[in-house]
Length: 239
Image 1 (cartoon, rainbow, N blue to C red):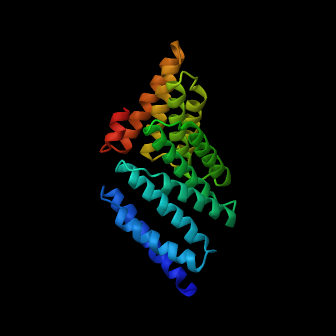
Image 2: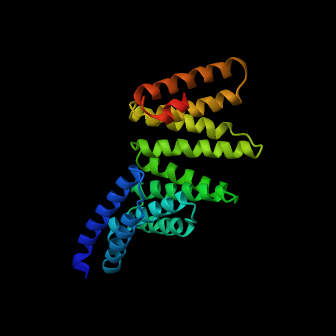
């Protein structure tokens, strides 16, 4: 019944938030994701023009793909479904940054799966980078989007390096993305840690005095990450 569609969206959204909470506790989010998907699919069947239902169903499909991937199972159908739903969400409002950001996440994770199984991951990775660029062009105050862009540029640089190609441009882009994120929020450990990784890679790609400068900058960034999150293993490994 169309009148109950918003209620199903609300319940599906709550289940999706519970799935996120389960993931943060390192528990299996799949039961809550299944409930979220069921409610959101029923909402869309009753009222296919609810933008919130489309975007959140795409997000649930994306998170389901990530959960499958964590278990070593093929997530491609979930990622394909998520991408199609984010495409549909863009049709409601092409200026909304969220669908671009989330589609970029779906493509990035699918790219990582392709790399895991020995397939060419570069085309999807570059599409993911393009989507993140459109997200920040639409809304440039999302530190999450800038940081994800940095991660993708680092992945692309590593891929180019593994193929004997020059990774300098994407690594520099990763530093730039971190700079933007840190201007928005200088208290986020992840931004300092990612920039430390990017600057360390720049040091490896440089020579002489420039290499020493980049290495020194990387150490300062890593130390800042540890200062902000001393309990974070990832920050300590970055240093």
